[in-house]
Image 1 (cartoon, helix red, strand yellow):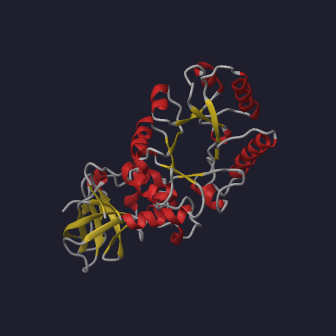
Image 2 (cartoon, one colour; image 1 turned 180 degrees about the vertical axis):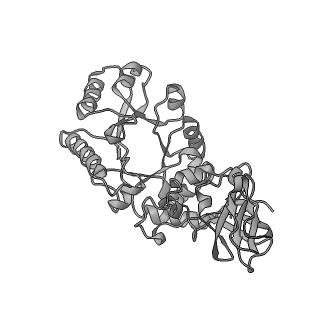
Image 3 (cartoon, rainbow, N blue to C red; image 1 turned 45 degrees about the vertical axis):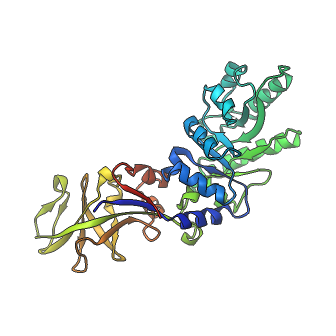
Length: 357
């Protein structure tokens, strides 16, 4: 018996279709498609008509090009391997004025998207004036071989925050940038800003935008808790197995560093073949596991095992579900375990059996 990470192909694709609706979606496939597997995810997205992808890794962008020769591929991190960008027809962010001036000659024939910094302060041109400076300088450049300005973009860092005004602030600042540039006659092939949270808050793509840039919702997790579970379906299952059921008595300790003390005699503990070495976060182990359609409390987490307190209905070889569509990743996000992407990224794909069903 070995713990398993598995994805239901049909449910994955159905969820992606439901998320996409009739909108133009740029599928975020960074970090090996949120660890669902880049090749798998790109194949499914192509099947439902998504032909635009973004990542933060040049290596992944090149892999996407091999999988999707006709796709639009956008690299959200700036890199200096300009020849590879050109060879693979990858579009790239323009992250700052200094990057533009320092690399202006090397950027020839590369399609760039002008990035606006906004409240996240991670990357981007800081003001409308800086954006215009790049455009004006570029237009005055008479060099036959120069970069092409094909896009305008930003990232909403606070779209999943409802108790503070920051999303409305960043949204208003961005829309003013977009509206001003368009009103003044500037044109862009692509304009994109929205992540999953903004996409659902706005019930679709913002006006004057060509795409929404969607990540976590395509992989089956809600970006905030008030979205109905039926609107975003989780196709991932992570499960282990009961190796044996043991009994302990009141006052006896189980697990590393006295993790759990039994408070009553004949306490039944299922020993399960999955642990933090397989990528189960310690914060996740403060909650429940699902055995035979019933939730039971996890009492201790070890590297390759966990203890789950059970009753007489649980036996050796029973499946122990840590994640599926009934005990979802996003449930534990909202309980403070960690971001959806953090829980997905923690999984150890070298120790777990990986299956696509």
